[in-house]
Structure formats: structure tokens, C-alpha cells
Image (cartoon, rainbow, N blue to C red; front, side, top):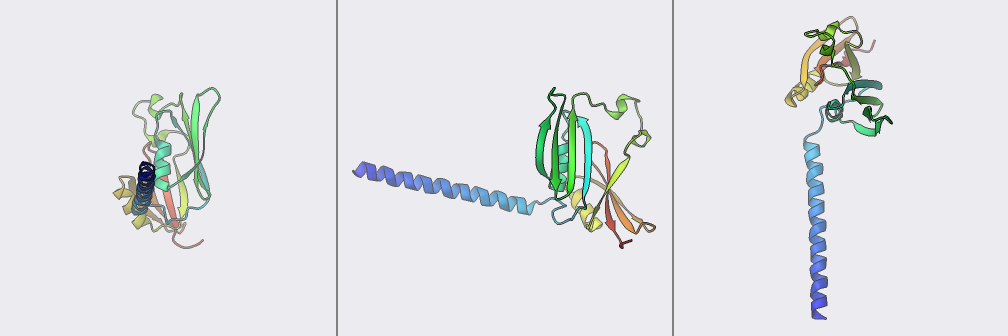
Length: 179
């Protein structure tokens, strides 16, 4: 009886130790996340849907998920395996990334071509309620290419230029005054 009682007590103590350790690790990871939020945690982004095609090896989806604090809705794969992808969102701001085995890089067509020479989307804008100067500094602190802030007086907007790892240009737009 004494051995059984000691084993039972030892088991309870071990269970308590494991439970407390788990709780500590959980609280530590929650606290670490709260101390290192994305620059967009307190920024409202107006509804948008943006899709990218990139290479199989690309980390573009991870960059958008991390930068904007997006939640993954689904990951998918074409039946033949030629394309995988991910659909993510934060509210009604949605990003979809297609990773293709046969994706071509822009300079596969013409060496030394400039991005602005290619047909298609040159840049895209997303409307926010962000303080662009604060957002710019936060992004730069995280190593993200956040460039100039342009004040367009005719449109009554301010635009912060951000460049993703694959040289796509985003204009983060804040309305100066409602039109």
C-alpha cells in the first residue's frame, strides 16, 4: 500500500508540474506575440482581394501573412501538382498566392528589363486608416522596404510606398479628407 500511495502522489506531482509548465509556455508565447505585433494590428484595411502568381520556392505568402497579420483560410493544390497556394485574410482584406512550378521570372523574357516596362499590374493600393509616418517607421524597423510618403492633394490622399520581397509595389493609402 505504501508504494502504491507514493506512486500515486508522484504521478499527481508530475501531472501538476507538466500542467504548470504548459501554462507557463502558453502565457510566455502569448506575451511574446503581444510584444511583437505586426505593424497592421491596429490598422483597419478596407475590403480588397489581391492574388499573386509566384514560383514554387517563393516565400511571398509567408511575407504577406506575417506583414499584415493574415489568417489562413485554406491551402490548396491543383490535382496535377503544378500549383499549390494559400488563401489568407484579415477581415475583408484577402490575399491569395499561387505557387507555380512553371512560373516565369520577368527577366526570363528580357535580361535587365525594368519592372515598369512589363505589362500588367505596376502597383496596387490598399486603403487604411493608418498614420502613414508611424506605419512607415514600424515597417522599416522590421526590415520591410517602406519608401516615400506622397501627398496627392488632388485626390486628398497620402500614399506610402511599400515593396514586397518580389518587387511588387503596394501603395498603402490614407485619406487626408473624405472626398
